[in-house]
Structure formats: structure tokens, C-alpha cells
Length: 79
Image (cartoon, rainbow, N blue to C red; front, side, top):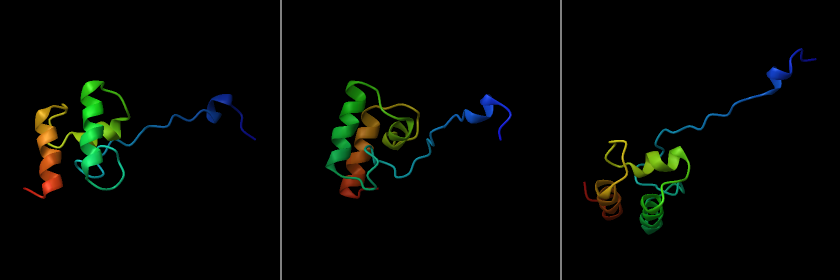
């Protein structure tokens, strides 16, 4: 038996660590769909923090053309 209603409230924090750089849609791979998803982010910034973290391929806490180039390089396997 719980003594406090406050103990029933749990705050879920989203894990914002990058799972796969360039994986803008978090499907476990980098492909053309990630370019589309990245375009959605830059057109109207929304979505979850993990999606944004994965899109930030240059790790500067911004989503811009450098990240788009980073996803393209990942698609072409250019380092």
C-alpha cells in the first residue's frame, strides 16, 4: 500500500543520446528517408529530442546545411 499519491506520479525523461548519427527517422539505418525527415525538421522544427540529436551529424547543437551534408556523406559512405 502506497502512502502518497505523489509516489504514483512518474516523470518519464526521453533519452536524447544519439543512437546512429544521420538516422533522422530513428529506424536504425541511414538512407534517403533520413534526408526527407531532416527536411521536415528544418522546415518546421518539431519531433522528439532523440530525432534532433541524430540529425545533428556535426554535433554543434544546431540543425543546418552542414548536417544535411553529413547525412549525404553517410549515405554515400564518404568520410
